[in-house]
Image (cartoon, rainbow over all chains, first blue to last red; front, side, top):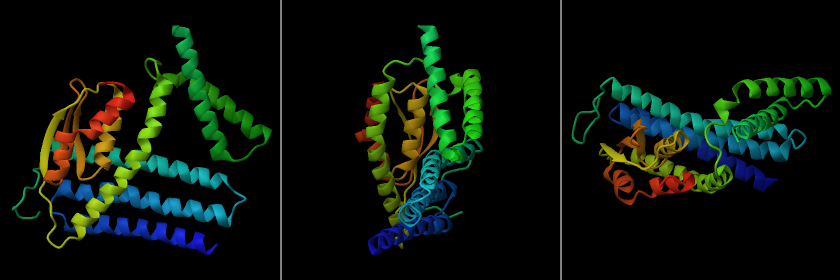
Length: 109
Length: 167
């Protein structure tokens, strides 16, 4: 049981770390496009890792209701499809609206 | 042949929707099962062509290759996150954004979507525009190295083209 707790804690910690990095990137990066780089990727893996940790915890703690694990697996699946698609849609909208990409050496916006 | 394809589409979409219903409901009495199956059959007869589209040639082989492709893609996602974390937390922020353009041999809808989402999830690149007619991609890269990985090595394009057999 201690091993399970350790693995679950590691997964949740890694998920929280990547989500935090995404938020820091959102604040630090200089323009719209680079900010989307931070959020679009880190949220996908961060959320996935947190849900994976919840799945493993549920498997060992409440092994009577295995359907919950299937539902969580669907959640991961849909996050991994929806997140890049949404990122791409926002990016495309910004590009069509004429947002200028930041280049090295310019002021941050 | 046309009829057989239609029946295959209806059966496949019915199977997927029924499995989804059973997994999500989790109640196994007669009322819930029968009402779910009736709804699944109605929906699959009316709109099976939304889910299962086009020619059904070599679908099994493509699905198998897609299953092999997914673990590699997951590993690329982990690499992408470590890359972004490094760039975010580095005091000097080593970024140098460029917008690049390249053409691929892909034409199918599903393969274009797969490549676009793969590019968005892998290190340092996000798809901006896709032109289906010529297979052209417009990609925003956060630094020079990920841009060159897409332009010169083209590992990802080759892998997706191999999965969907559209070289």
